Image (cartoon, rainbow, N blue to C red):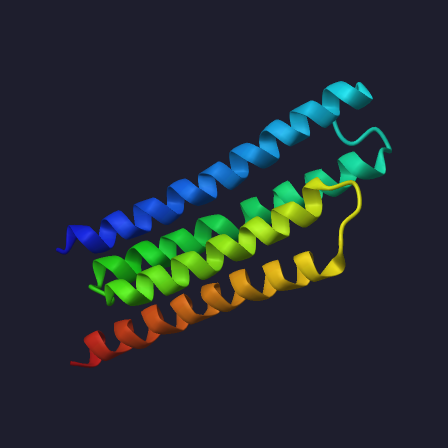
Length: 136
């Protein structure tokens, strides 16, 4: 097993954790500002950031399961970096859009596109390699 490849996955997992921490801290700050402890209290800004946080939690786990499997299948280090960096930049742009009270639509679109494309590519790579190994 190549630990450098696993370390690369770890790096992107930590960077995405930092994005989640940022969203979590920002959400807590908005909850205090708007005096809302549960739900969104009908506040549009709080609704927005909660949706962004939920979206991150919906997308990050499966991407990292697949990226870890790719690493364990000895995917090329460059593939791990390209996929991990694309996903991370995408999630950052997406979070940037949702943490703002209002933001340009390009951030959400670019963030979604980058992260979703990386997710699809890692899934296809793992599926293709798994089928190849099982048929060998």
